[in-house]
Image 1 (cartoon, rainbow over the protein chains, first blue to last red):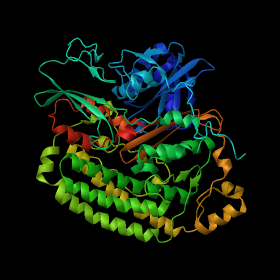
Image 2: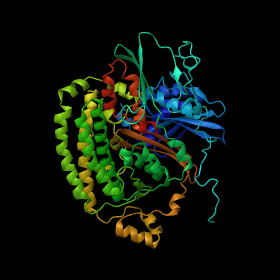
Image 3: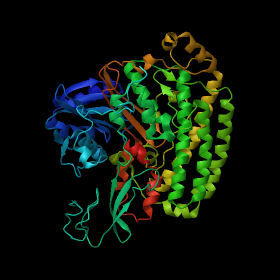
Image 4: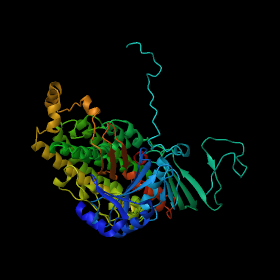
Length: 164
Length: 416
């Protein structure tokens, strides 16, 4: 299925729910309101988008938002296997809360846990929301947010620059 | 279930003992709770917490993350090229398959495409990696099932493909082979003959594997009908790669969205219907056969197109005289300092590829700077980990190694 056909399909299925539809490199991004994410996800599932490939969050401190993107595609409908759809919501950075989509797509369950531990996004209605990869102390610090700066250590630290 | 640190436990038994990082909690009297791992239960550190009624698993909780190496965060603070050697350390046995999609994502952002010879070289190394990855998986699986002959044989035979990769790239495992726009090294002249011999040898060995392992009545008894994943269940859980294809899902990135030169090659995607551990084992054998055929086709093509460039012309023109000489005489591409600090146009891109264990997907975002703004990588094992939670319960404890081994789960890859 070509991106244009997919756009047509989405327009037809989602109607006014999509705030913004953009063709990116390798996927089509659909931005929706945080309130309408569950109905949109259900509609996409009805269309045949049956699994989540990736749940991503990106931190934009300047705009004070975190964008969560679900990259979904299809296994069972082969014509939908080629396109990837990015279903995005923008959340406020100081209190990022959204509905969990693990009830719609179970394949997103573990990855939502990842977004929770790395960005501090809370998913309401998630069956088991706790850190997946990190220890709880580290998860508290929201390490993938931009204000967590990786401290670089050098073996030369404190060594006098004798040879300069 | 409530957890409380040791010392505050209400049981009183362990009052006073403070072991850092340990938690103690009540479990129901009829259930055993067994912690399998994290001391390297198979290949890499991970833990599965299983609750047993008798020897039937009623609940399994995959507790992963022991080998998390902050790859996504580190990619954000390193220049564009440096994540290549970093990311391939997720799966050193499958390094080229892991990095090609990252490079593809950069190429999409840069609007650059590699010359055909570079694409063929990438595909050649990807397929060598795939065979090696499957053989590695078989070896671990053999150990899980107490079949040490399979372990010895496959690890010995895997060495042939590791050697091939070394001859091609200079490194046994972490090749850092693809770079945006091309590859770092051309094929040695005598490589095609070596590759053909390896392929001939491996075809013969597959028959022996069948006789000693796959048709072995003990192995068949332990795998047949164990860990069955139906087609709809597989789609619901979003599992990938040979595991999904063993459940009847006809999905392979090389078929759905052919990257590199996969659309020019002649190969089949094996699909099985059974969805049990035995089907997941057989499908890997069939995939090795297809990969061997792709290796042959790739070396044939490369032999017919000797002397074609492996980097784009505009990159070649920028090289200084000495670098051009090295490139022409030895087929090696020496990168310039300017490559390390290159800027990539702002944008968002997704690229995916088919690793030995399944689909890997990269989301790369650039703000126009010298480092990525965001790199998200989802590896096949990260997506297959959910099998432990939803497929394992209901089986007996002795079936757990069979399921673990058959989904070819690899913790360092899942934890990233």
